[in-house]
Image (cartoon, rainbow, N blue to C red; front, side, top):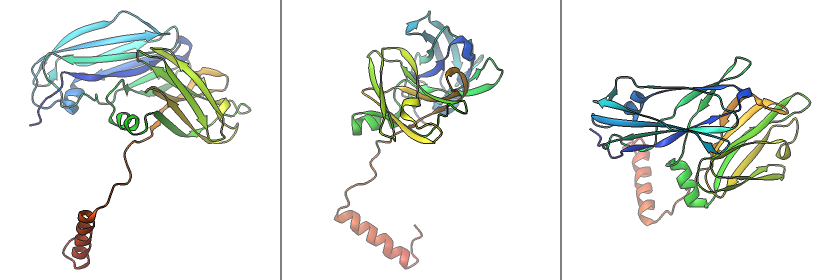
Length: 274
């Protein structure tokens, strides 16, 4: 049985939008967390905190405690219906009174943005910290970097594209958005702020293009599709891909060469299949 080592999970973050964009519906099952991240049968208490930020301001925390018996919560579902007066985000903190989890990385959560027109758009949560790919990237390159290969704007046809940037941290982040055409824009994100930045300056109208966002600190990023000139008339949201910090090459010394030669010899003589 896998040992529990962590009292808490990395906070999950969901974006929030102005009221005219629609309402965010969050339904998250705590038992799913124990199914995916729980090791041995945990018995104890878990405190859940839902913290909402809008336009940089934090409202009152919603905090409650649930009893857990053998990794099961009697009433496990977190449900919230949120429509803000501006751009913001929600943090969901989960902490136990004893080691309850094998990893601190929370399993992904999903929410729905119900737009004013009645459509439903899936929102995927992100982690406030402890994402291994982001950690590896910054350790190797010293820079936060995300990229998207399908940017598209076309004012003539009414297609708009923006980048949603969330800075849930204590310091200001300076970010640059680069287009493959060589153009770029710079955006400063104060602590605990959200910006929806139009991509018109870095994309060529009517042509699919790649864009990249870099920063002096990590951020939460979403690619947003919407009616051109109407950033809250949203039609889809998508995650960007983290630029991987994983090395693709390694040193190959004499011992490695000997092992490779041995495996090749065994395969050629039918004594090994891989």
